Length: 422
Ligand code: IMP
Image 1 (cartoon, rainbow, N blue to C red):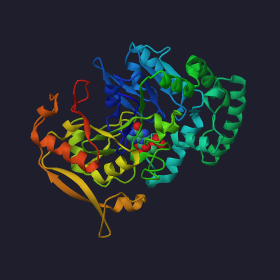
Image 2: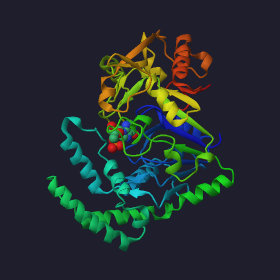
Image 3: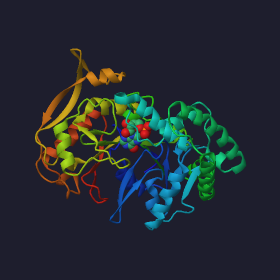
Image 4: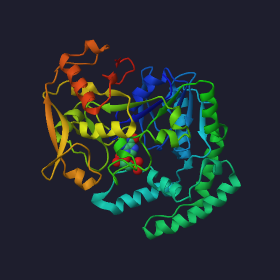
């Protein structure tokens, strides 16, 4: 297994939760590197559906240690609620969870600012999850954020929080939003902080000691390559590094300790929120939605859907150094015939093999499609690559070849068993 970085090779929602869960079986430690409770990783464990937002999905398996690294932004109230929810479903959380004391906090004014900024943008809004992620990372970059270590020092925390709330209340007032009560936030955050205290500490040292002992670590990425703050379809992105580099900076583990990068991609393309999606196809989306597929795990929003975009995944392969590919939702194409695959873009009469940096230009790119025959058969019960219909095998080989990495896992349904290891 070695030390593995798992990332999304598209716009998030690639079905990473399930692949993380499959790979977790062989890992000792599972680390969340970046993002916040904007993520929603769905895992079916013992017949129950779990949607994890901040806690690594390794928590569902006995004997695994889960780490929330310093690159994550944590809403302590949401984290405590997630822990309570998991415990109610019978999941043990005690010495199997560690939280970096350097992780930044998401505060109520971040959520309100997120909401206000979106409102003000009108039709050019980002379509954020409204969890306050952008403003929280904004404070981090501006060096004005509060961290878990502050929350662990109540007197200091209250002092810093009071100043931050005063500052943000004047911004919120200017935006026409209601002010926030220092007392309420202070009380609720300190109470959540006390519940998190046993888990908070220096996770960098923990991870390095574990590496010295030969432990195998899985770094689970949240969101996807094209939501990366540096490499995504800016400004329609999230505010963290969702690409492989984020798995080093987020938890503080150097690149040379990483052994492989697994890229997860759907057999087609989806995106939630606004921004360019060159292969978007409304009819295809309607078909998937009618099957009850493609609704966001965090916000419940219907995802936008399109054909597989090999220009995007090839670029993702380059940025992340993908060694192996896991293809999910193959069964979503079971009734589709023919199946389109975008092999290049056309922009102002020119053929492009890489996505342009500018979101407006990407929006104007016309996909150049190849057409492949569908298989018109259920793939749900296939457990070996050889059991897949010939057209499905050809399709998988084709999209992996275009992307530029070998196929290692195929997912044909949400359950753990509906997984083919190639
Ligand atoms: P934010 O991360 O809430 O600021 O949202 C920024 C963009 O990233 C929006 O388009 C969101 O829909 C998208 N996004 C954030 N988290 C996820 C995720 O976990 N899956 C898919 N899209 C996401």
